[in-house]
Image 1 (cartoon, rainbow, N blue to C red):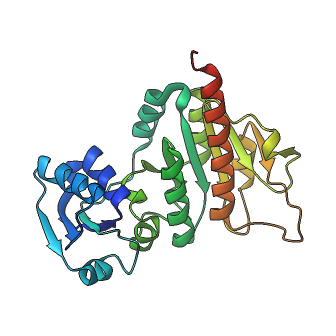
Image 2 (image 1 turned 135 degrees about the vertical axis):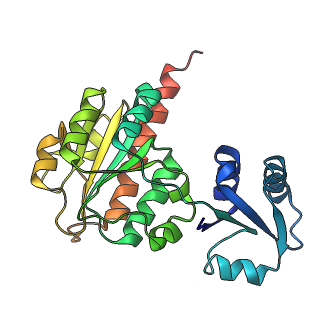
Length: 254
């Protein structure tokens, strides 16, 4: 069975904590003896994952000179979710459901960066169309630095039908476009939510936009007309996270 390389203490630890059966081998940097490395090694040994020590140069090569932090794992890659699996995840998340929808992103570097940010903010799943969009290629997995193995990823045959299904499960579907009349920071993003980002250059497709409950725009104060899709995705996801954390703090019993 083929494997992919996941590197970085956070990504490797998360895999060992949540998906240990998919980790085939853990490689740790020789001479590293700090608490975080010891914790990762302990998780691996508890799960029966083989552990080996390697020189830093070996880990540099395996991670493509990425920031491996002394930990590299050989992992069985995650497979994309089916649509009914996505519905189950959303149902289990309840009012915390937080889905990122990418309408036709084709650059693997952009998709990888979006997955990395999506994992950082704790999305329930990332959804992309099956056709005319990038999937989980080796470049995507490398750029995502482990997030592609941690974030549930769904490829759907009909994106509009998927959005209607998410609405049926109680999510607000919020799109992003430069022509929107509502400012991102004036929108309520604290509840069950599906955020839709358009593709490089052309943005959301017409039918996708029509399936949204409403759309928002990022305020632009300079002469730049638009942002790279992965940058814009990061801005929107973190604004949603900020609102969700604030709402949770207010709702928390004193």
